Amino acid sequence: MQEKIVILDFGSQTTQLIGRRVRELSIYSEIIPYNKYPFGREKEEGIIGVILSGSPLSVYDKDAFRVDIAAINKAVPVLGICYGAQLMTYTMGGKVEPAPSREYGRANLSYIDETCPLFKDIEPGAQVWMSHGDTITELPAGFRRVASTADVHFAAFSAGDSMWGVQFHPEVYHSTCGMQLLKNFTVGICGASCSWSAESFIESTVRELKEKLGDDRVILGLSGGVDSSVAAVLLNRAIGTNLTCIFVDHGMLRKNEFKEVLRDYEGLGLNVIGVDASERFFTDLAGVTDPERKRKIIGADFIKVFDEEAHKITDAKWLGQGTIYPDCIESLSITGTTIKSHHNVGGLPERMNLKLCEPLRLLFKDEVRAVGRALGMPEHLITRHPFPGPGLAVRILGEVTREKVGILQEADHIFIQGLRESGLYDKVWQAGVILLSVQSVGVMGDERTYERAVALRAVTSMDAMTADWAHLPYEFLAKVSNDIINKVRGVNRVCYDISSKPPATIEWE
Ligand code: XMP
Image (tube, rainbow, N blue to C red):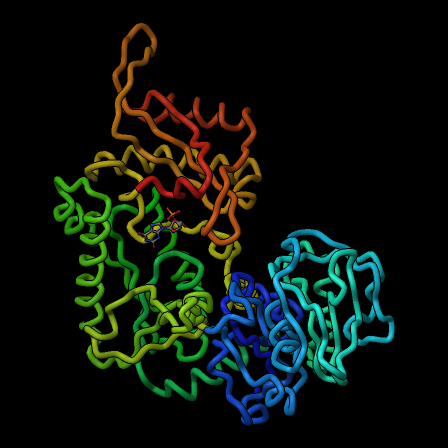
């Protein structure tokens, strides 16, 4: 049984981060809603410790999320973070009240109990990150203060020798002693063996896939992106040619992408069928300008094409997908209900009567990349920027035509190649060119021109939820602009998009 740390989610924005941090310590972690804890089944489930997350709620609210911490603690050590710590205190006889002034941001631990195993190798003065409107004003009997900051007397406490609470957030990067504290809890206190690695994941997943799939056939849709590619290589390792991959060209991929990615896939030994369905997509998109209609048409056509190809494999039983952990975590809404996971290719399994097989559903994005590397996949497939499913269609404002796609592919190619050659590609989260629906006046030689304008877009981001425009060097932008205007017929003006998300989005449509 895989040993694991469970993170009980009370709805905090940093819950996922706790899970990732624990994984960074090579310990498998699972995030589950606070009301889904498997009481009494710790041994069978491999649970060696539990971390209670923060929450936007107050523990004294009528509808506050509660859990029987003492019952969990009978089986395994528990660490409460922020709301988790306050819940421990409040439900065991202590006092939690609104803080006289809300405690946010950087703070330093002015006092640390050096005998406390949670603070092993952490020195007084260590920086922590606070983010709470309530504070603990009185500890229950038997609880002991083990750390303070200038403003927060009970910054951390212990109860007995298997329960701790911290009012700061060790999981955020700004808590410089946070990783040490999480290591002290998971390794020092819970006894984790730190054996979770890309290699161990591959070994156990390939074994499980072999058992589960036997001689069954699996179909998987490849997109050229890292998730579906890694899922395919992993499945290929388990079942070889019983996996059939389908890679659909909707005509709006980047320049040469269909050919190059197909070649990469074949080089990886994948049994892959490339389908050029561009004619159908362009025909259905003719005259359509509304971004959401464009997306719907592309989505519907994609399902039809995929379905037609998949039906040729008559004995397929499974649909493989590159769904990853953040897509699957049941996120808590503040009403306490759980919002179900979503899938990359929604609707396909129901239509096709196939069972779902998602070998990456336990991994965070950086772990998917690590698994890809451990599987020997080429670096350019692993570090590839995210690219929207509808492709260049959402980067051509207004109607999509083959001619416009051709122009955009050339401009995009110059920008992306330029980023690669200048060593900037891996410094940005995502980059591309947008073909605007305006024309502008220019002069080339002695001729007046009236041609298209394009916008370059490059952003930095951690997760695409928020993003900043990448501060690319002027010299680089000047060269790209020059190259595009000189080499791409039909473009005479280049702009650089300096909008952040929010309020803008990464894509223009
Ligand atoms: P926005 O534009 O919402 O994009 O800031 C966030 C991330 O999602 C990608 N994106 C899409 N991906 N189908 C996709 O598969 C879509 O329709 C779509 N629209 C945006 C975008 O490229 C960015 O990574």
